[in-house]
Amino acid sequence: MGRLTNFFRDVAREMKKVSWPKRKELTRYTITVVTTVLFVTVFFWIVDMGISELLRNVIK
Image (cartoon, rainbow, N blue to C red):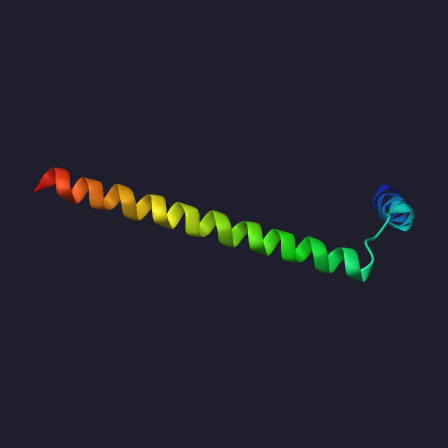
């Protein structure tokens, strides 16, 4: 039980050392991530549609 207590005490100590992002930084990072995910989603959707159409034309 003492090891578990020490573990959580160490975790709390390390969390105090963390440099948390400011609100403006967090907003910018969030927008960047969401934009990147949307771009990659649309890109792969277009590629998937192109491959599907190509396969439909080859099979006919």
